[in-house]
Length: 235
Image 1 (cartoon, one colour):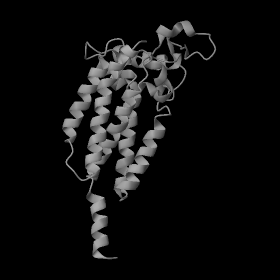
Image 2: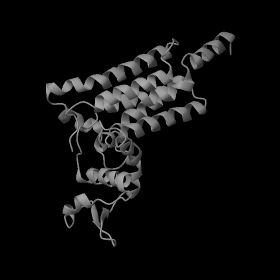
Image 3: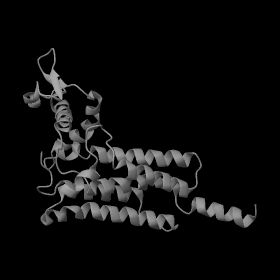
Image 4: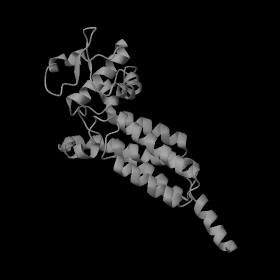
């Protein structure tokens, strides 16, 4: 193997700062998810999970008494328990996926638990994508296979449900933004996506990218602007 070949291979490995790539990969799919985030609860099962998580945050119990009207119906999300409360009959561990963000919603008067509850899958997608990229890098793979594998996983994951109940966002997107007046709500996630893609491009070319801490602050601010959009979410 010639010295030139060794130098080329070294340049390919170090052209993009791989230590930051998992962050950018996760941020990329979070931005995409934000663009196609469903604007309402789509099933009684999803509503049951959100209700149980909200009760856990506020009252430290995971009942779904608000949905007791569904008792006795086919495929009801809950059943009466020995203590006289109506509780979930499926995926009780899934409640804990919603608790952190829904708890955060109660700390801000401008947000409601539903808004951040629906965002849970996007956060999970970002974290899992970042972990996969990190694991591939730890295995010593070159940037190109890492990028390909990460994008493949993230792209496919947009069509699946992480919590088992929330519908894949790409299937719901066409029906959620049918009115032109709602298109302005897409501006914050579109800016976030553009910023992430731009940083990935410049990083891939070995050029300077935005610091991770600054990008994180921008993502939080743009996500907040999106969530505060009037009329976007409905139960």
